Each structure stands twice: as C-alpha cells, then as structure tokens.
Image (cartoon, one colour):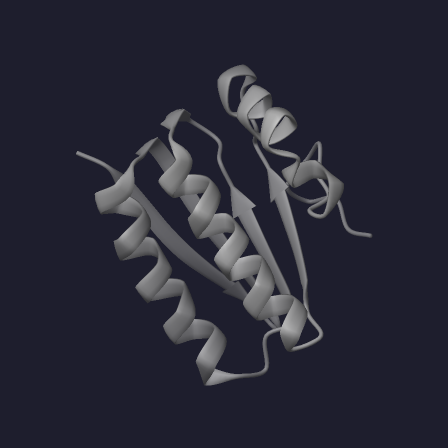
Length: 109
C-alpha cells in the first residue's frame, strides 16, 4: 500500500511520500496538498521522498503542479530524500533546474 503523510512546522509543509508515486497516488497527494496550500500561511513546501521506490510521469506532474501553486503565492518548493531512481527522473525531466534539492531534510536555505 502506498503511503504519504503531511507535517506542518509553522509556515513549512513537509510531504512525506514512501514506496510508489503513480497516477492514483499523485491524484490523492495533489488534492491533499492543495487543500493545505489553499488554507494559506504556507511559505515553504518540502517533498520528502525518503523510501520512495518508484515515480512515473504522474509524479512529475504532481510535483510541478504544487511548485507552480507555491511559486504563484510567492512560496518556495524543495525536495529531499531523493534515491537513485527518483534522482535520475528529476535530472532527466529538468525538475532540478527549478526545484532545489536538500541533501538533508533539516537543511534550510
């Protein structure tokens, strides 16, 4: 079973996603995160992919959509916990050109 959870630290929202991020999971995550973004007072969104084993193009779309929403509102988006397979997808898709990667989840810019 796919798993994701949210953690709020002040104006920072951390999305933890483990295992697989496919179309079905991307739809669920998008709706949940959008609800939090729409509540307001969110300045930073961090995608924590620790433990993720698979991500398809739906995952890329989900990340891009949330990045666009945060960017429109003047917020920042980061990723962390990137494994080798997901790192390759982020590199090939060009996501790293717009979304910085934290080596450690506790890192702050």
